[in-house]
Length: 147
Image 1 (cartoon, rainbow, N blue to C red):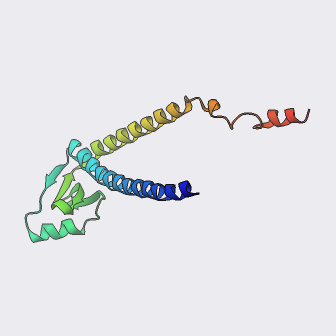
Image 2 (image 1 turned 30 degrees about the vertical axis):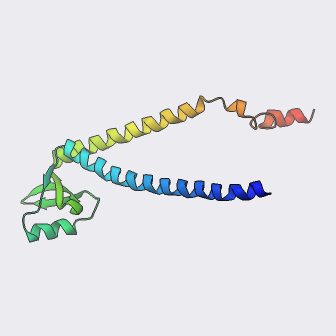
Image 3 (image 1 turned 180 degrees about the vertical axis):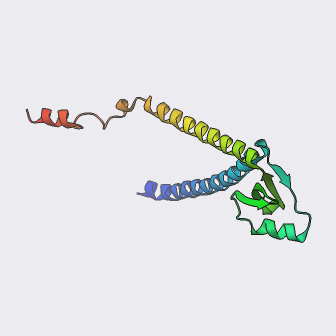
């Protein structure tokens, strides 16, 4: 009984550490996702623009955070991704937007390929050696029991 009582604090510490690590990784992955989006925008040809006056600063603050906005200026279509935290915006035209969409698609397909590879890696493990999936599962096995 005493051994089990001693193991409870160790288990609680392990759970606490796991929760802390999960939180830290989720925060880092959110930041990484934003940085990845900004990197793709730059790679697609978007220019980094810094507001030069209060009016431009106000416009930057009014854009939806984390979203690419389409605006019309002087008869031209522009796409703007605000980064208010760094007081800048990523601005591109239709060609840059098209390149960004292609980069997103390529990135999404690469992620899907990675996930598929991970699934196949799991599938190649010898699950039968783990037991529990053998006799009794499936129609053929159930019929066999009644003979």
